[in-house]
Image (cartoon, rainbow, N blue to C red; front, side, top):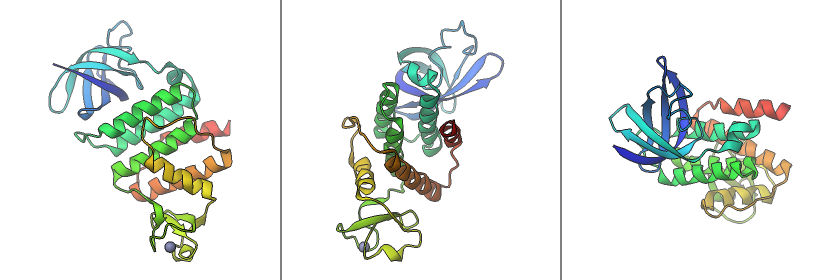
Length: 245
Ligand SMILES: [Zn+2]
């Protein structure tokens, strides 16, 4: 039996009373578990097996499907669970982990980030910016990090004026015409992309950014992930629907 710290990233009903769950852990990456009788509200496993819950989990380890014995909640993330906006943003984070990380892969650094960002969203900090930082960190996991330090064509760090999704990063004024999908962006947008790639989980403070800038960052990172991962993220639709309200 092992006691492991983790975050519930996905759940699914299983048989009559059981629940399947996927926990993202620092030590083992993603772990799939069966929680017997967890669907019953009277079960001691009912609360700790909800999506977004951060806790300590004791399970009998088996290759494939392990069995959850008990769980102790460290942070319930109540704000995330009860506020529709926060739920939508946090769902996207979990979907990035679920689809971007294979079983058995260990990513302690991503784990730190996920935990930190969930805490910040729960505490009411700007979820949109936090999501963008996480997307940037996930490009490392996917092995598709954009070049956000210098021009993708000539490597110059001077006169950076735009971004190319197809060629993967910054463009300088001289090379701008070389990328077919080149888009001009204000220096603030390019600087934030650079910052997102460099920042560590303990360094995030309150970043105040104009909505127009946020929209540009979203376009860049959505387009970039779409083009280079080919993954369809359902939870983005949930966010878009809320945007229209
Ligand atoms: Zn250049």
